[in-house]
Length: 211
Image: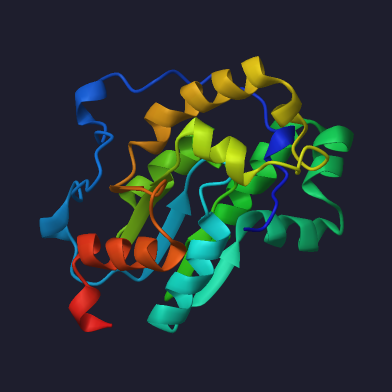
């Protein structure tokens, strides 16, 4: 799976959801939160912690649907002609989060696209509301346990410095988890190959028979 620069993220201070009962439970085969409202989405957005497989799964999903795949971090880097790590270092997190939000707004207006978010994008309340309320959009959380994250991200410390700070990593994971679970759909990916994750997404959205 492609290495990301999520090690540069930091807390945005957003509180956990007010009603945890509305979050998707961590189960082996979770169900969509709003199946009745979905016919065939025009875009699928993937969120989750580093190492969850957003890029790998996103590319496979886009291929299955014959859609485009877009990665928010890659789009930002291309536009700025700089790495995410350097953008954080030079401009700081508030500047980056604004650019990230603006980029997501632009990309989320596209049709027939699978969009992969950076791991920290979910901490911006504006981004959450945009993607949760957008019509014909499915926000999908790829849930990887912290143990799986550590295994998958082993050896990427240079790109993800937070991996060297276990306490900070765990705090970040716990802070984001309830926000990820606000997604329309959560898929537990620990024991699934990427192709099986794609199958599960299509099945639980309800469009497996149409592709």
